[in-house]
Amino acid sequence: MLKWYPKIRIIHPELVDVIPNTVQDAYSQASQLLSKYSTGTVQAIWAGWDIPRIGATQAVDAAHRLEIKTYALEGSPDFVALVKNPGSSDAAVVAQQPF
Image (tube, rainbow, N blue to C red; front, side, top):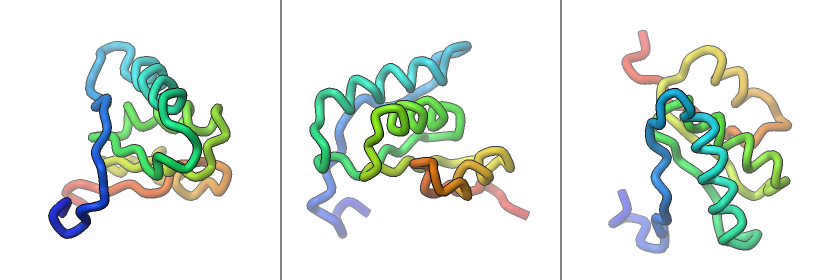
């Protein structure tokens, strides 16, 4: 996909499991990322699953960085509800193995 959109740039950190503090760790990492990159330079944060996205979304919302949307996999009902909330930076979730 990146070859079709060559202007997309991947930045780090990668939000991964830090059990039992995945949400807190993702919040901390996303907050650091938001401090490093000024408004308008980051459009999205992708998390590999719903739990780290919670922390990333909390950090984005707390920083009032309305230009940034968060995305993840899993699609549990709680997270689908977050995506439906117009006040949240959660933009989309992809369900794996939907029935």
